[in-house]
Every structure is written in structure tokens, then in C-alpha cells.
Amino acid sequence: MTDALELKPIQVVCDNNNASSDQTIEVIPGNGTCSDHLRSERNEVSPLLSTPQVTENNSEQHVDGGVDADSLTRPKWSRELRRVKRELNEVVVWKFKLWTVLLFIFITIALVIGISIIVCAVVHDDEDEKYDKSSFVVGRFFRGNFTLDANSFISNSPDEETMRELEKQLIEVYSSSPALERYFYSVTINNLQDTAAQFKLQFMMPLEHEELIRYTLSLKMVKNVLLQHLYDRDTGAPFYIKPTSLHMEVG
Image (cartoon, rainbow, N blue to C red; front, side, top):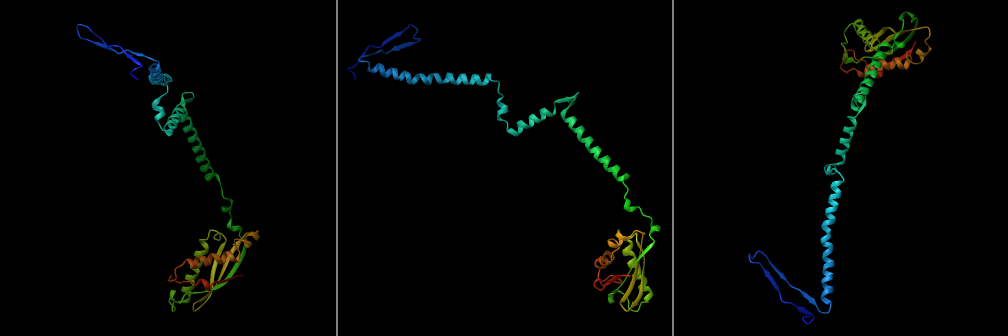
């Protein structure tokens, strides 16, 4: 390979101030082999030299595009929140912003609903609550019997006192019933033997009472009201009536 190259001596040029020195090595190719090698090296180096220029051009285009780099780094929900805030602050009617208009509409709807409820509660009259008790002229009677718990009262107490206590208990049951209170008239304890007692109930109805007999003043309804009261009482309560001993019929 040394035969193919011809070397020239190095020329060194120096000025008087020794400020700079240039060294030149000139290689003269002999048969063109070295020339091709150098040309390929220049081709390999030239793309590397042009890369920064492309990068610089891209960066210039990115900056010139006016894209907010900070907005790109924000999460999606943050960008959506900013968009919603911007839309709510837009002026839509006169000088009112959108959020002000929405708040006004919401308050108006709430006021309308509230006023409607108040008006309905004051003006509405329950027709079922309007009745004239003097028009209840038709009687309906029930009779039955039950057994007292022997431990719930003193056995040597007068029968009259025991009967009054039982009547008071039955009056309280039917007078406090929302369904039967208006029709209830009286209760009577007819007979008391030891712990067994017989009773009679009287209710008053209007002339048109077919529906009452079928539903409100039916035997099942009247009996269940008393039976529920007996089950709700404590076993040791005074004058305790055994629920299982209750018997009732119409008449």
C-alpha cells in the first residue's frame, strides 16, 4: 500500500509572532484507491452534519406554531375544567353570565315547587274528614267474650270495678282507632264470671252503609282492631285479656 501513495514534505508556515501554525499534509493518490475511500468517508460524514440543521428547523417550526407547551402537559380533566369555567363565565343575556342565569333558573324552579306544595296543603280538603255524626242513625252491633289472666287482677275485687276497667279498656281501643273512631258508639260488659267476661259493641252508621258493612265495619275489621291491641299489651299488665280467648260475632 505504501507503493501506491506519494507523500510530499510537510510545509510549516510560522509568522514572527508565533500566533498560529498551519500544517498541511497533502496526499496524492496513486491509483485512485485512496480517493474513493475519502469520498465514501465524506458521504458518511455529510448526513451527520446536516442533522442539527433539520433539528433546528423542526424546533423553529414548533415555536412558530404558537402551541402552548404548558397546556399540553396538563391532565385532561384540568383542561376540561378550564373549558367549563370559561363557558360559564360567558355573557349570554345582557350583562349576566351563564352561571348566573342557571342559578336564577334553579332558584325559580325550587320556589315554584315549594309554593305549590304549600298551596296544596292549605287549600286541599280531605272529603273523608268531613262528616256529620248526627247523620249516623243506623246501629251495628257485635257481641263476644274473652278470658282474663287470673294473675292480672285481684280475684276478690268487686265485679263492678272489674267490669268498669274492662269497659274503659275497650272504649280506649276503639276511640283511638283512625278507621273506627267516628262510628264507635258504646261498649257494655254484660256478665263477668270468675275470669270470663261477655261484652257488646255498638257502632252507628249513615243510611248508606253498604260499603261500611263490607269493609270498615266488617266483623274481621272490628275483631282485628281489638286483637291487635291485646297482642301489643304486656302479659303482666292489669286486667290482661288473653288474645287467644277472644271470640266475636255480629248481632
